Picture 1 (cartoon, rainbow, N blue to C red):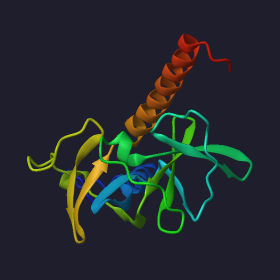
Picture 2: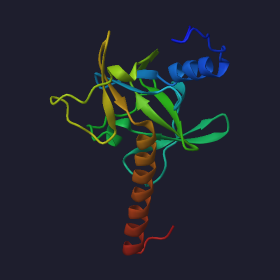
Picture 3: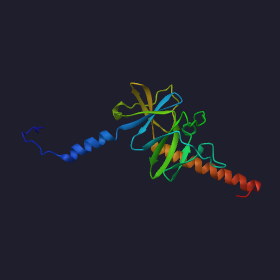
Length: 184
């Protein structure tokens, strides 16, 4: 493309690479939970697991369903419902999927009904949460897609909330045991 003074600027691979990386950064993993479509940035969605058996954790807080062995790594599994202040549904290995999120060096799984797709979502098309949807601190915005309204989640905030909730839950349970004189 020529500039107004008639000079063609040099071809810049860096600019093209930056543009392509920006497009990739707009990819989202869209999933369904309790009849609502949600999405997280694809860079935070590590993988999807199906039919996983869960090991329960004694005296775990309500948000923590249990853990699973992911190729030798212990992966905590959390209720997305609890993290989003929604009524909790039980985990059904035959029906539900586990969406593994990775943020800031922390990996965890959240229960979803079904991962629907990975698709680009233009940030310019993400709008504020409509009044008819109860706003939540983890909702970044809303996108009207071909399959319906998609709520964009703050994956970093989701993982941080999960860690804080589980940590606080275990501390409270430990404090309760100490007050009643129970041992480890």
